Length: 439
Figure 1 (tube, one colour):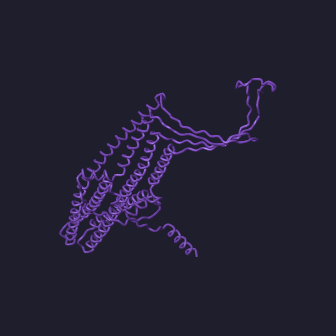
Figure 2 (figure 1 turned 45 degrees about the vertical axis):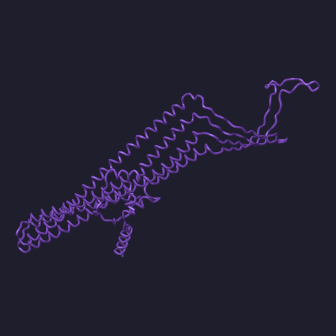
């Protein structure tokens, strides 16, 4: 019974620790990151849009009617002599010095409406540009999130490819160890050959452990970028392959980037908003006109309550404010110049990214071709060395050297594929087409 209990407990623990493996492609990883519960940057970008829309509503309120309602109850006394009322009426006596107490009620609605305020109109236009900027920044965050997920996915793919290469190296080392033992049993091999093969197998197993650890780390970083629970087990379904990438001139790529880069559009909108804010401060020197009015009823609590109303217009002419308006105008002009500098700097940065990405594509294509040729040659060398060793016409060291060169060639090929795919991400990201490419 005790053994049965231990068996059941071990089974429960194994089931609890075993999680279903989630198959994940690059497109699925991007969709998870862009979902409402995905990357944190996307959630923050959504809140930025909400704040910009709230600021637009505040700016619009200055152009819409403002209506207030009030109810006032007052119990008061009036000293007539304080107003200079002190005279006598023949037959009635002198006027009293104190009147009251008496209670009054005033129920009233007050409305104001801006008729002409050019500065307020410019501020509203600037707030609308701010909303457009926030939406473009959200698109920019989307592109940035896709880029980060793509890089994390490629890093995990490279780690997975290195694990597969190291497993192949372990299998090859085991086969060569078996071959050395067979040669020893046949009397054509020595003990040192077996020891050398065992050392090589141990080295390859150690490399496999390191690669598996790197794969676990890369998978965790990928899960963090997608917003998925870090305890989830994941298996990547895409493969790191070589694809020929058509190249454009840097000038043509820059034109495409200017049409597609959401961060550049957002920066241009920010510059537009800064220009409108500057205009709003500048046009504050113009007169503004507003209509005002109120209507209500007032009277004694124990007497008649009579309607009253007031309406009119206000013409406000700025004359002198102690230099406050000039200081705000200088500040707005400085902010506008700052945004113009940022726009030019971002354009130059995009041009640099494009030129570097194009050079990276060209270099990585050559690197992949060279690594592929080196892998083929290393495989052929190993086969020839193996046949020569089996025939007894070469020393075992030649086979070990060929084995090491094949392992290095596999690593070089994986590194070349990673560099090529990373260069493709850099190029499409620089042109602003990464989102369409991934999806």
